[in-house]
Image 1 (cartoon, rainbow, N blue to C red):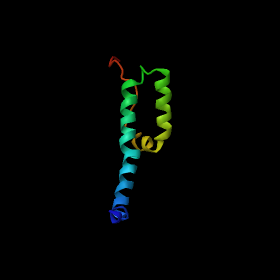
Image 2: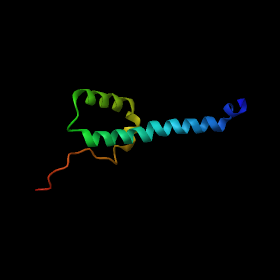
Image 3: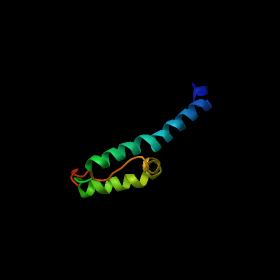
Image 4: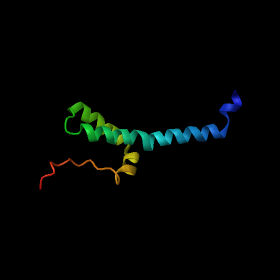
Length: 77
């Protein structure tokens, strides 16, 4: 069992899992949450979201060119 934990492949897989969660999974969930709740958030929820934005800022920067949080208009010119 000790040789399993000393294996460098397990270490690399663990790093990839942690980095992908930090840079991909949680920022996408955070964008989804912000997009759905932006106009109806309470002050404490907004404070928590701002804290998560600060914490997961590198992942949010990766997706910012592709995602849009602008309000949806009524479609009338």
